[in-house]
Structures are given as structure tokens and as C-alpha cells.
Image 1 (cartoon, helix red, strand yellow):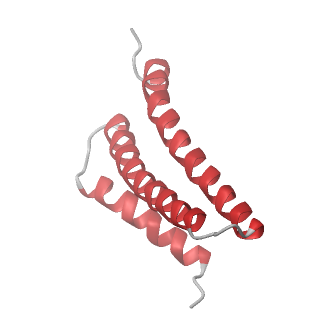
Image 2 (cartoon, one colour):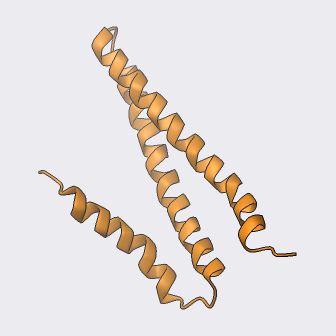
Amino acid sequence: MKINKKILFIFLLAIVLLPSLAYAQNTLLDIVTSVKGQLTALGSGLATIAFIIAGIMYLSATANPERMKIAKGALIAAVVGIVIIVLANGAEGFIKSIFFDAG
């Protein structure tokens, strides 16, 4: 089964944005915080699943150099994804201080 990337993107965007807009927050900060929380949850779940799958790929490579190389690449990608999520959450306070805290 081939997944159309545009349809998948629209579906994921709808999953993230519709609950945020349905609560009818009053300020832009409320909407941004809500979307950030949903994206963090979605990204964390996907990164964790990718980390587990990469670990299973690495364990099942059984000394096949080509499969080991693919598994190492997948493991590095999963770790980079987790690091990006952690850094993005850390940057939230910095961005809030610049744009939303005027005094």
C-alpha cells in the first residue's frame, strides 16, 4: 500500500490543529502552547517507535555489514529526532521571553 505524502501531511496537520482550535483559546500564546504540546507528544511517540525499530534492526542484523549500516543510520536518525524534540522544548522559554514577555 502506497501512502500519498500530501494526504498524510494534511491528516497529521488536522490531528494537531483541530483540537487546538476547538477549545477556542483567546490568545495566540494559548494556541501556540497547545499546538506545541500536541506536536511534542506526536514527535516523541514517533521518535520512540523509530528508536525501538532501529534497535530491533540492529539486533537482527547478525553480522551482515549492509544491514548493520542501515540499522546504525536508523538509530542515529532516531536519536537526532529525540534531541531535536528536547532542544525545541528548551527553546520554548527563550522564544516566549523574546516575543511574549514585554517586561
